[in-house]
Image 1 (cartoon, rainbow, N blue to C red):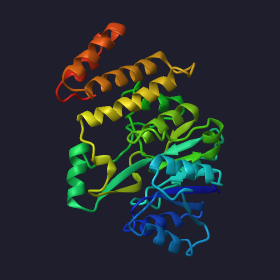
Image 2: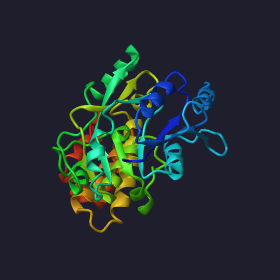
Image 3: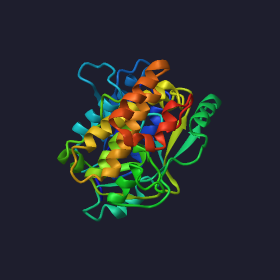
Image 4: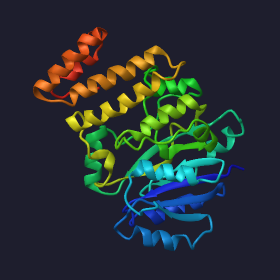
Length: 316
């Protein structure tokens, strides 16, 4: 049997946390549930303290200074404190489905498998939340990849070398052997406020051997409401491209240090960070940045990204 630590960052989630916890406790494989408060101000701490009395597997944790540090720092604290062989993540306003670890039970029998991922569905609990989500993603379908893969094929898919794979799966639908994180000193990037999960997953797929589980049926549910951080940054806005720039800049400078990452992958990261930076600018600054990058990287003028960087509403 797998022994799993589940990490739930908690920030102002008093209305949702009990359902999230109950969805975790249904699994005998879960030996530890870490509820980590991130400076909540709505009574979440009190609820978490009450919940810890329900089941000895539950541990309530706070940052040493009891302040808000963000989801990345909170998840990292959970990773550091997790005591079990496997780690899974859940957000405090989401919940697991009964099939959450079905694929893992089979695939983790193979010791070479470091991580298994599946699909995530969305349940809208407010109409405004649905409107904002649909405006952002244009679909209420599954958050998943398009084809099964394992090993380096997952990395090539997530880094968009294989464009048929899809570009993202959710951390909520991911289970990891903790040792792959510790051996590679892999944690979430606390400098990124948006896209930190994507960067983490891409790096994980490089360091570890990942395998797709259920990609055409959900193993967890994300709740859609007007407080979802993911929908607050509008597509194609300067703010959107600013965060894209920070994400791909970080990925590029990490990738160039890895000897066996294909040049095509490094170039994709480089093009995206350069042109996201251009797209995040306005007025004269946009054009001066474009000229600067084009002079030192003339090959960029032959890529499709040159069009997107200068459009009023670019799409990368």
